[in-house]
Length: 231
Image (cartoon, rainbow, N blue to C red; front, side, top):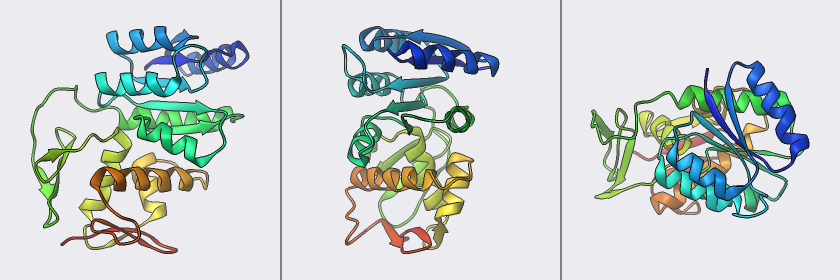
């Protein structure tokens, strides 16, 4: 059983979604405004936040930024009526791990929520260190502590971005197919996730200071997947 913070000001969406989540045996706290969500999400511990971007007071993106700043590993799933890919990328840049566009199917949302909850079962936000993994690129990761660096600079990665970087670096020098990345990082098999994968790759590249047209770290292998360059 997980504790879920559901932030949605539309009662016609919030109430049935809360019922479905409770039928899944989750504890659900429903909040209808951004200011309360930010305070509650920062002060208390949740296993998952489902966050609408179109809130009446404090913008959902700002709520997302505040939650991510307070809890680096908190899984955040955003709901957006903004169909533009640009808006979704902005949400991911703000710290979200995944997004669902309204109107959405309940089965799709639950599948994404389950995937985030599975990936969110990691140790707390401490600074414990484990074994490091890396190559000759200057990028290295500490899987146990779920931290990553480029040179001496620690990268501010979301949970999904870390999992994606780890999956690519584990196969450095080899192509990792899109299907395998989706399976490894999201635990789901559906075409809708390919767009989410591309957006996370784009966000990860920006944080690495990479250039898609002349990549130093992550190369696109058209029609197949991505490769993390080993040197």
